[in-house]
Length: 218
Ligand code: C5P
Image (cartoon, rainbow, N blue to C red):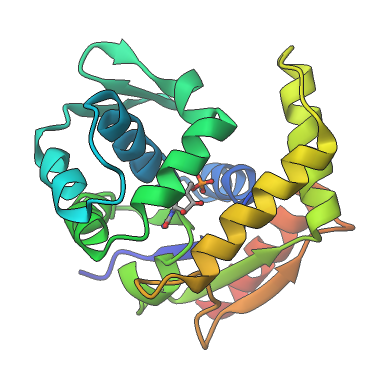
């Protein structure tokens, strides 16, 4: 399958999702928000009353999740869970279930299925290392913890959700630590990833950078 893939990995709230959406739009490629799959799994496991430390039990519910992705919304059965998925609390659930190799294995094929013509932009933590190791362009996106906390804060406030910037920063850093230190597909740049620190860049500039890299790669 010679379907091109661009991978965008990086820590929490580095702007991967926005960048992936914009690059996908510019190239006419589909987008995989792999974090949404871990979020949905965490949410469903919590609702089922499962012990989130029990990797086998959590992985076992994945095949029965009735997931549907439609125009930027995620449905679990008939319920639109998009807003629930974006909550910080759900991000924490996601990072708890994401440490288990069984859960990662259960979500593997589901993620590969997003690779369709004319191409895919995949964002997450292990897109370039585990899911699409042969991708012709791998980006590792970073931004300082202060920048990331501030962006997340503005996002929440603009949606009318109250937030505290200090505790947001603590949550982000706790989640990053767990993602970096787990043994199953830890958060780390692929050897051939290009690093992009967007602390001082606007979204336009980041998109231009990635599209420039893409043109030069082909
Ligand atoms: O990217 P997002 O914040 O939605 O991811 C939520 C959590 O899901 C991450 O903190 C991480 O623990 C997990 N995740 C992962 N591998 C991915 C994407 C997300 O482990 N490819």
